[in-house]
Amino acid sequence: MDISFSAKNIAHSATLAMNELIASIRESGEKVYHMGFGESPFPVHHLIRKALCDNSWRHSYLATQGILPLREQVSMFYKKMFNLDYPPEQIVIGPGSKPLMFAALTALDGSIFLPAPSWVSYQHMGHFLSREVHHIITRSKNSYRLEPDALVGAIQENAPDSKQQKVLVMNYPCNPTGHSYDGHQLVEIADIARENNVIVLSDEIYALTHFRDQEHHSIAEFYPEGTLITGGLSKDRSLGGYRLGTLLIPPDETPLLRAILAVGSEIWSCVSAPIQYAGIEAYRIDTGLVEYIRDCATVHEVVTRYVYQRIRTMDVTCPYPQGAFYLFPDWNDRRMALKKIGITTSKELANYLLENYHVASLPGSEFGMPPEDLCLRLATVDYDGELALDTYLEDMSSALEHPETFVSAVAPSVLGACDQLDLFAAHISSEE
Image 1 (cartoon, helix red, strand yellow):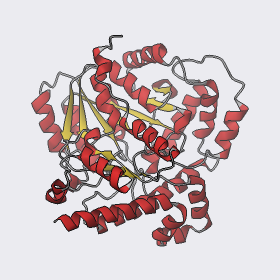
Image 2 (cartoon, rainbow, N blue to C red):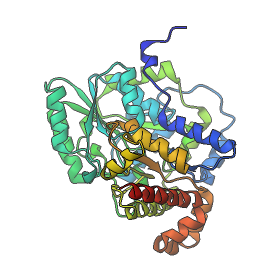
Image 3 (cartoon, rainbow, N blue to C red):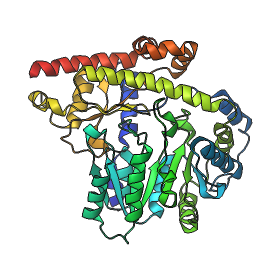
Image 4 (tube, rainbow, N blue to C red):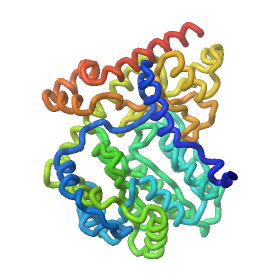
């Protein structure tokens, strides 16, 4: 059968493909250190699990926008946690943040601008919609943050007409780099967006995974009239398989809301009824769930920053992580030594590590970086989340003061991956 032009140009999601590959390798009995897929590993909170069971009898179709009690709870959650005012009428519930982002991009006109590196699916969504996609290459020395002058330059080069609407997709804490933005940095971006008719689609799915020395600010604080926010349960509540996401839309954007709901009605109809009712519990702020989220985020912090410190001892450049559970090191300073063993692209680097050191990662080229930029995305969640959380809660101060002991006890695969990367670093040094 003939395949459509749009579908021919879309590959399987790199993150999902890697996870499926590693699962098959492990099923065959081979050892692999899985740093290629980022799924938060903690157990389902018992109140959410009970709410799902209690509502398992629900079987009817629901409104595409989502049930009102859930949207009301999401509204209260965002007010309490982020001081953002979004009434239930401005909130859409979808089967994960990914389809909600796709629906928003479908509804919004304009070229799409992506800081690079950025999450793998953004660019593919744009290409599937036959839209112009412009990558704005960021720099490791600035932790791969989008800089105001780079944004201005990209706009002037690709869409200088201020009457022409543009769409900027942001994500922070960031997958793949772990960086975030402070309020001042977001104000600068918001001012540029406002002056140049740029709509911001802000993917804040990792908002509550920020580390203890960080504070999350949404760009919607500074640009409420031009920002859409996506969120959901997959990262901070470890509920990726529940497939429940949220989309917050600026006030007085009725045509946009109508368009997004029209897309949703034709694609997913509505989110599963039991999941939506369980979602009400997942957005409660008075049951201890917020404390659970913070404890899980702190475990992410301990493990991720341990891996960061190990990478830095290898004399490898890597931005300091501020949230989520990813690192984005690069081997550009070791380019000549890597060339001697046949590595000139990030894909070759990732393949070499998997084949020779059994460490799974993703090449930076999957995230919009130039192929020759020798960067990788490493995820730091290959461990038993229930064991890690219980161990942390038993002695928090010990976990924070002695991260190596903690990681050794609860995340041996993560520790093993670091040891393998050490061996690779030593091999590269011998080539210099």
